[in-house]
Length: 603
Image 1 (cartoon, one colour):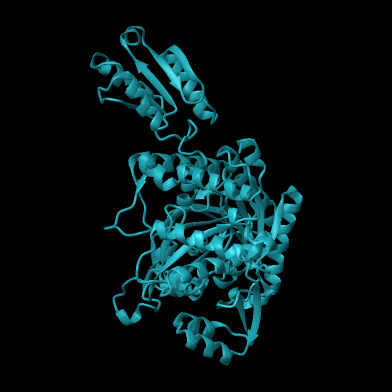
Image 2 (tube, rainbow, N blue to C red):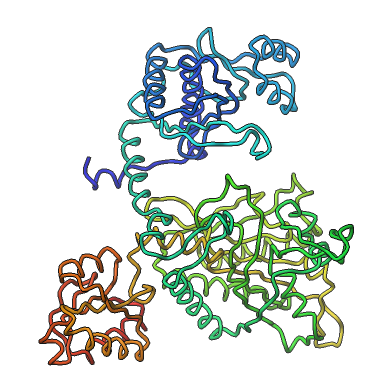
């Protein structure tokens, strides 16, 4: 299949297609039936659809092997070709319990207990296999295309996501409407594996994880730190131009601070507890915890002095590291970690300033995306779900004002957006930017939030023009979101081939022999003095290998130093963007590279 054809194939998510939902849900049951045919001792637990496939968790004493997965797929094909009817049956809770006890399936009993409504729905595949299920499904197994289904992998998973409970084996699969969709999905998956930031991060020497340190806690090497610092410095300069004031806050605070903000009540289970002088006071105002959010700290800075309407807006910005306890099974490279840095800023504005400041924040975020070449995104209006009022704080009137402010902004900007009830923060609605990467996967990056509630909870004030005390409105914003997640996305989006301005090493000098090593080191000093990140390959390898190594490390510019170059104060230049540029005076290389870096262009 040609790449031109492949690019035209749309791969819908399960949530976007009722037909795919039925296909994948049925395929998961077919897989479970196949497993129990081949491994009668395997206990079935849960088997939902996912956005691009499905999985089922099994309690089986022996690990499933790659050969087992092949056999399972072969058995699935047999079941599909049998065209077994998929039939729904409704039974009483007592009858469901009797049948479960009859087949000695303890996991199903626990699932049954977690189903709140009666009666109980059961789905049968033919006459011999069934499971508790709400559906939906296709009418018979023959409605599945065996050439559009695959059994992909197996991984460990704890029952109910609880590390203290039984470890199960999760078998992942995928199912599509057509073989062409499956082939395109597999092509993208293979490409994703090539671009995997965990793989590239190791190959390019950007970051590491360490068991003695702990899971979900990345450490940045010199090259990775250079890349991070370049991103942070870029945004800091943009913020300074737009009137933001830098602040720094501590990594811990009293529990009482987060009780006032509401984080303790809403996120206690996701926060890292810390010691207190009195162990019994660990949850009192005397106890300390690692911070999960930066906003309460910025609120304290705002509140440290009385503000006038003339002082507003106040824009406080910080690259603040926060800590949240993620389950070990939910961690994933840089995109899901336990300690991460947020490019946080909090704006304290008058109600009259809200719309204008919100638009300025969006303009900053769009400018950042443009500089990073992140162009395929849409806006999500993350609002509260009125049916789940207990998830949020504050009066409905405050929420309506905040949501209306966001609607006004996106309508004024003419942005492509969609509303997502239930995705709001507990204190206010958000405008989230959902980015589609080169493989059409979705990531949330920048976010802007309108908040009437925390100013109320912390009793924030400013003096209005008539001398009265008024309540400011807060805007929470983070163009990057998590720096760690952004780094992971950028590594994959660029496939490690960073643009010149971002590359940890912008030029590598390749001395042909040791005779040119001294000149190469002197030249490197000139590059450093010009603000260009440079390194010298001192390995002594042959020129061909020097070039190959630089290409593998995705160095944007290579400067070959031979005897002729040393004598003429020049470099033989090769670039990843433009190929061979020939021999150029070093002064010209410096000047052109500085201009390209400043403009975020290519050399």
